[in-house]
Image (cartoon, rainbow, N blue to C red; front, side, top):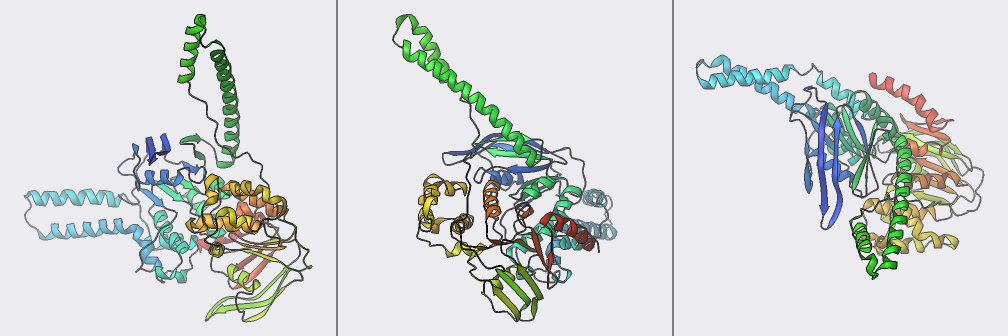
Amino acid sequence: MHYLCRFKIATMITVNDIAVQFGGTTLFSEVSFAINENDKIALMGKNGAGKSTLLKIIAGESKPSSGSVSAPKEAVIAYLPQHLLTKDGSTVMEEASKAFSEIFKMKAEIDDLNEQLTVRTDYESDDYMKLIERVSDLSEKFYAIEEVNYEAEVEKILVGLGFERSDFTRQTSEFSGGWRMRIELAKILLRKPDLILLDEPTNHMDIESIQWLEDFLINSAKAVVVISHDRAFVDNITNRTIEVTMGRIYDYKAKYTHYLELRKDRRIHQQKAYDEQQKMIAENQAFIDRFRGTFSKTDAVQSRVKMLEKLTIVEVDEVDTSALKLKFPPAIRSGQYPVVVKDLEKSYGDHLVFKDANIVIERGDKVAFVGKNGEGKSTMIKAIMKEIEINSGSVEIGHNAQIGYFAQNQASLLDENATIFETIDNIAVGDIRTQIKNILGAFMFHGDDITKKVKVLSGGEKTRLAMIKLLLEPVNLLILDEPSNHLDMKTKDIIKDALRDFDGTLILVSHDRDFLDGLATKVFEFGNKRVKEHFEDIKGFLEHKKMESLREIEK
């Protein structure tokens, strides 16, 4: 694999008739498609449909039960999984520079071979000729690589992904899983692969870094296949959508929003064909039942029985048509100002998080806390919740404020021994009790799932359950820290609608622009040890910030 060697490859990858079976279950079968040079593909489908499995097969990380994936041998394919652990023992800069290790090895080998050629005198020997051939071969590849200032490239990518220059010399072990994921992503982008495979790349990124990644993938990357629940990200970068559903794929030359319209049309046609076929089956079955045993009609009856046996039943794609509408239970009215923060300062030891922070939130406000990771958004929430000591200033919670709080660690507060159904049934009151199964269904808990104990659930499932629990408790001040992680797009839409109709006050920490769009009407930006108030919605804020951040990265 020669990183940065640029070969003209039109059809990059061909997926040939692949199938995956687990035990007796077929995840998908007869899946075939080609990935072309500049395709930007969104891989969509319900949780559990097999998207990540398909991505791993394309990456060569997993093998299909049958079928194959073919690619030109010179093609560089880079894969970023949803969860990974990098080895420690390097600085951020050293780790990111490993992207060029193949090139550095090549250069070292060329230097070594040239050294051998200058000291050896067996000019006529086979070994000497082999050395010349090897040097010639390597040199051709090496000098085909464009001149690159490697250090500058590494810097540019790391800054784009949200690292400060002071981070470059820090050990990778000092960073959280999300930041280590970014180092791996930096290595992938630096390799300039022919195909980039990304599984939920934005889960651990702030808005500015996501915007930078979008620009990079649109303007600097070749082919990309991405799985993501971030609708804005998917819409901005993709020009093709492949949906995995009911064991097969549908391929649309369209971005996600357009694909939704096309899928709707497809389903209408499927439904029509299904209804017509069912009518024809019923008519034939009625004929069979009526004339079975009638001698004169034996041949006709047999012929129709055989026809029905051979019939391929039209399938209609699974679409959850239940018009589920979640609504927060009514809560008592809070005072005029549920949250007032004055001249707040907070530091951990020598590390100043922010100072002179002032925030006034009025009853009914829906505000977003945004900014790079590590700038103090979660710290501010902890201060509002009175979970941490502050250095100076004050935090006042208004009269009658009833706080509902959701964070990623909410999942750990659930009763491990209760079932999913019991967890919700214990807090649901009134009419909502009749809707518990529907609500659980909207959050992807179906059938026998609801009898599972909390302790056997995955992290994502626990998060979704904690979210439902919050939705059913009467509060008038909601504080949500990254609520949309681990949720698919449909579920996010359901929650977003519920939050839009919520008549209390809302504080949202999120990097999901689509989720914030039309929900947050005011933005508090955290950065450079300060909190800055913006009297505009998320779209206005981002347009303003994009110009600033692009200038910053070019410095």
